[in-house]
Length: 536
Image (cartoon, rainbow, N blue to C red; front, side, top):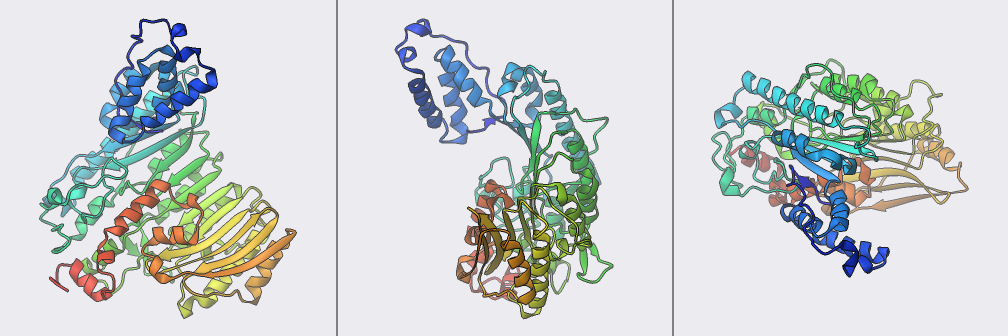
């Protein structure tokens, strides 16, 4: 069903003068009537801009059509923060039809000078705008009476954007605004002095420009947010480049007491801090917030958690050069404490999908072999050591052994995936149960065999079922152009990322500079990205 954009016009009153019962349509059997209306409903869905107008016109035909199409029109609502007051006055009894609400929060614009400077006033203004929009939406939804409240679980999605964002980044970053798949024409976004947007002359992008885009917002809500019992799913897709801090997410979660599913797709933080312990030089400044969020702030009703920390290889290259670093990881080395905290919290979940935010090797270091996941059916984790590097082989085998030992304490486990993927390289270790058959498999761009200990751990798990199979498949590296390609080529569980987000990454990859410069050395790519090389 298409989204209802912002606030629709009030549905027209019935204007058909002929009594409904005398019309030829009303003489048809009920199943035929609904087949016809279903075809008309699909006819109204081709484009975002016309769909609701078509359905609104159908709703004016007669009372029967009005009731049918009204329930369809109001299933999915797309609201801008500026239209919330009108929405409150208009929704009325139609609230009972709502199944999904997407709130789009628009921040104030900024100039090229502002994108290269730290602007305390802008940060405060953005925080206030975000807090005000969320609070107002919760207040409106909290006023819905029990009679008019939606009967099904409702999904609440938040996105935050600024119209200036597309003027301060790469021209192939298609998804910085309100639309799922919008693309601003290149000539309209070439006036930023901090970054020349032409794909031929890339110029110099100052790190402040990226930090503006990937900053963390700290909205502070005055008083309590209204409690929304009917919301069971909460989503923030990677289309929102700015992150919400853990405390604001906790306030939102506390107001959703029946929350069952969370999809959270933050971007990799470009502001790092030195790490005090050994396995990586830097921590994300958000890691403490992640630990707090996973440890104490997720509701007890939660059944499914999806966390996908996205990244851009081009942004990483610019960050490396701008800060004078010799190396900047495409996927950061995750913090082991975040993984351990999530492992502790996961024992009550039914499904867990955590990509690029933790390492599976940290997750499966279980301090107590008596740990059990009685409800867990599906789990998918990444590990940045899962590569064909000879130096990673021993660590990979140890991680797979530990994963097998943990899987033995997951009595309802149907699918486990441990994977990694980026341009040119991808692999997945998978355990899956189907029709009583346990399948243990490896699929990747390189060959990998389990050592004796890892093999023994997984045979022990597989023998819980009448039959088990072990397989291996080799992929061609040329097929993997991004982490989105890796997800598709490896057949990763589609729940690891929102389907809209997956398609966005694929579209961005098609136009990416790395794709255009296929076969170019890493040094030449870096120089061109920094505007130091004018031609190849």
